Image 1 (tube, rainbow, N blue to C red):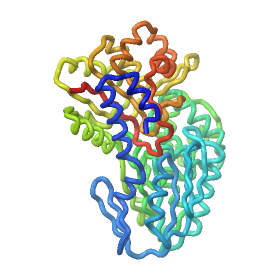
Image 2 (cartoon, rainbow, N blue to C red):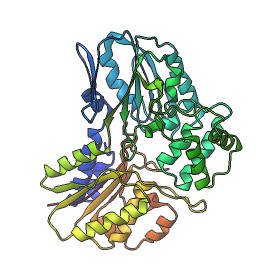
Image 3 (cartoon, helix red, strand yellow):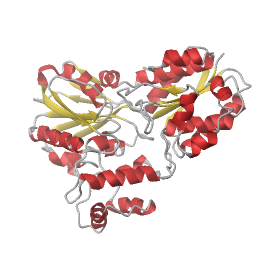
Image 4 (cartoon, one colour):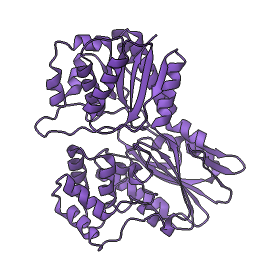
Amino acid sequence: MITNKRELTTFHSDRSSHLVLGALEAAVDSVMPAALVKHAVKFEKELSVRDINGKIIRLRNFDRVYIVGAGKATAGMAGALVPMLQDRMAGGAITVPYGIKAKIKGISITYASHPVPDRSGMEGTKKILNVLKKVQKNDLIFVLISGGGSALMPLPAPGVSLANKQKITNLLMRSGASIHEINAVRKHLSAVKGGQLLRHIDGACTVVSLILSDVVGDDLEVIASGPTCADRSTFADALKILKKYRIKDPDAALAHIADGAKGNIEETPKPQDPVFSHVHNMLIGNNTIACTSAISYLKKRKVQAVHLGSEFDGEARDFGTFLARLASDLSNSKPFAIVTGGETIVRLNKSKSGTGGRNQEAAMAYMMELRRQHDVAAAFMGTDGIDGNSDAAGALVSPKTITNAKKMNLKKYLDNHDSYHAFKRLRSLIFTGYTGTNVNDIAIVCKAP
């Protein structure tokens, strides 16, 4: 899965680095969509679906099954689900990012842009709606939702253009808005997000959403902007977010949200809306599963590992600095490992925008804070395989990385948000390509036995 693992383990020959890279692979393997779907869905005499919290639904009576969805992991989810359904499968449509290769019997696949939506994504959404038009009372719809689904399933609200949504998405991302904030705005510029996809479906049929979380806290209404979930955010909330980040254009999008805040446009469906009466939202995977698998990998190799949680957010460089201080405090202790996850942010400066991402930036801050060499290695990686605007998944910080970086002006790289080129010089970038899954980011710090 780490495509340059041999190069990394040869150049960074310390055991701590080898353990960190192995634990990363174990983490990502555990949240591959096919494995998660096969664990969650059973189809023998009846169809049963189990979520990660033990909730089970059983479905006996349905005529035909349709599959729709969007996201970075959705192709893998559909590829595992279709063979289970056998002759009940009646058709489907999904949208996935450019770069993912998939061919699934009976499923129309559209490739589109992420994180900024494009026209191909709109065409994919229209194909999804065409599938939903065929659904009848006794049919079952699987909606496969994973990270990236918000950008990959765009359908602007009346009066709002795709260009409007593209611009606002870009502005919010560059301003450092959280995914919760970005999606609250997206929902109120959309005709399908925030539970509105259900308004395009015959209300008497059964909808089962299989959801793979890429959101800190696993809030179902935030994942892919919750196309089948009740939305607690409002037009007024969206307007406050735009004001918070001083987003002043495009005019059509701002006018739409302002009009909604005045009560002139129908709100997204709220929790008691009858549209949810036949809907089951099932969480089948998250960052905690990945972290737990990394810990299991390390413990089998005689390393005492702890999970610091999967809810880290805030500034990437603050996160890296925090882990470096923790590693420094523990460096003289027995072998240890720290495993944690979440999704941090990077606030970009328009005049200083190099190549990198939140994981590489956190790794850079970690390296700058640690300063002197310890027998400790750390890695920061996005489970989807793509970090920021780079082609790397993240970066490794080994004892050798720290030694070789002493003559480099790391602050300049960090200030220019150009961590990619620093780690490239240090031969410490981690490459995976698209992994086909997405459960946020993972950071691992390890001192080997």
